Amino acid sequence: MKPFTRLYDYIILLANKKNVLRYLYMLSFIESFIFPIPPDVLLAPIALTKKYNWVKIAFYTTLCSVLGGLIGYIIGSYIDNLSILNNIISAETLLEVKNLFKEYDFLIILIAGFTPLPYKAFTITAGIASIALLPFIISSFIGRGLRFFLVAGIFHYFGLALANKIKK
Figure 1 (tube, one colour):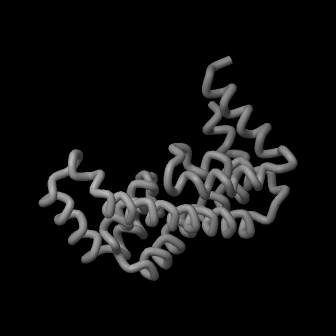
Figure 2 (cartoon, helix red, strand yellow; figure 1 turned 30 degrees about the vertical axis):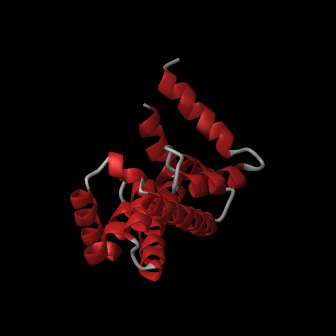
Figure 3 (cartoon, one colour; figure 1 turned 60 degrees about the vertical axis):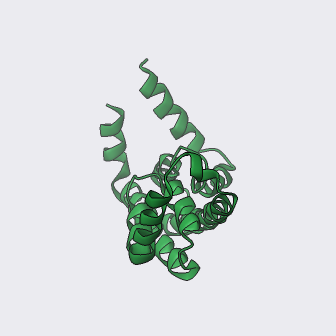
């Protein structure tokens, strides 16, 4: 059996476990500031099982992701205050990034929340740039919500055929 097939089968098995929603929401929370695996990996097979209301799991996945994003934002604000970045990035480059974030904060977070880009990098950078918190929260909800509702909806309604294609 190929390694991907074993991993795929394991995730499908995990999606049918009793406490899987706790794992999903925890994954969604910590992925927003530190963990490298996106919640879609677990959200999709859970929606595929049709054991849960896909709208509800997409909403709570979004909520947990945005709450985790707030942790990333806080981490970023402390990183800037501690001047840890001075050895990694020049002051001029950091100022440019801050200015870009301040000018396009809503759009940057919305795109980062929706795309496969590492959302955690943007949550931390938003804190470093000290962007306004309310636009950060709103754009995170929209971007992450669009992504998770799309994934959950697609796998709930079209999942079996899609899952079989992915497995092959």
